[in-house]
Amino acid sequence: MENKRHKELSDKFVEMGKALISESEETGDKVTHHAGGYLVFLAGVILDIEDCDYVTQFCGMFSAKKIMDRMLKNSDTDSKSNSSSKIKSKDSDEMSYEDFIKKLSELRANKGKPPIE
Image 1 (tube, rainbow, N blue to C red):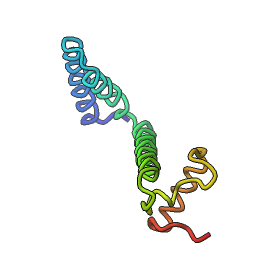
Image 2 (cartoon, rainbow, N blue to C red):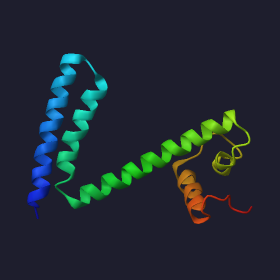
Image 3 (cartoon, helix red, strand yellow):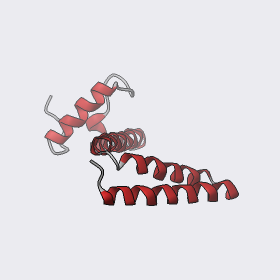
């Protein structure tokens, strides 16, 4: 089922995206070019609720990974950082995706407090 408002938004996103891409071709600004591409991408996504849900989940996972990466990086420079020590693997600086999700779930379940081991 196509929602009229969603179609209007999609059309606006396409126009904004095209304008940004055109601008970036003149200026050589890659960030503006990517932003235009993102808007065109979103124009298609918002027309389907399942696509919206998938992209929302992906963005949440991407954001969580960026936060976790930053926390791990900070733990290398600040050994007193409690939040980073909660998720840093004892055996390695790298962890699998499954371990990452498990650690993140533990933190959420414990409201940010490390699990008792």
